[in-house]
Length: 264
Ligand SMILES: Nc1nc2c(ncn2[C@@H]2O[C@H](COP(=O)(O)OP(=O)(O)OP(=O)(O)O)[C@@H](O)[C@H]2O)c(=O)[nH]1
Ligand SMILES: [Mg+2]
Image (cartoon, rainbow, N blue to C red; front, side, top):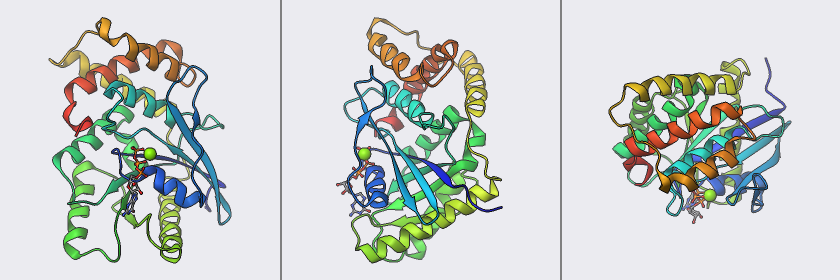
């Protein structure tokens, strides 16, 4: 089947996981931060890095657990970043970046489950795990923990890669090649299909029904004005206008119900 000429990758993960570093590793230089939309105060980065016969289009996102932005804003930004590729097409892969410290916490698991709610269960076939801060070989205990994490969160592929963004060039090149090879394999298994707005809209409909049934309802108050303004500015250019309010309400609900794993 071959591989797509353009491989669109969204970098996603906790604050400090190494998302920007992996982007810089692929670029071989520091990425240039730019505004996503004229009205958007928060910067965004999408860069293209040639790799072998392919073009990697990498979209950096705000870290989940961002310290100075509200949870709702981070979620709105994440969704906007997912759909902001020039070609207006969704990504082939959500590269889930996790920094190896002491394995995985329950918040790490919960966080992926929140993403699964936002993007829908189908999105799990587009997630690929990349572990940063690994210097040298993984121990069998580490491999075991990684396997368990993948199973718990429900990524479709059991495969994953590691990288040390601060490693020497030779090691990094090897790790990048391995990563792109594995991603290409996943994309081929997905029949070269990418994640789409239709999948997202379906997921949001499912979420809307869950919210209606849920006891954790929260009406938006005056204090949410900023959240609503930012969400509208971010999402209106990439989603149907009448859909934006639904997404905003979903983000408010998720931030209320799953606040802890979006903070810690
Ligand atoms: N030792 C080591 N440090 C790393 C690695 N990857 C990233 N770092 C460091 O970890 C810190 C955070 O990395 P970033 O790439 O900025 O993390 P991020 O995911 O973009 O974080 P946010 O943008 O805040 O969400 C930086 O000081 C990096 O140099 C790695 O593989 N090994
Ligand atoms: Mg970053």
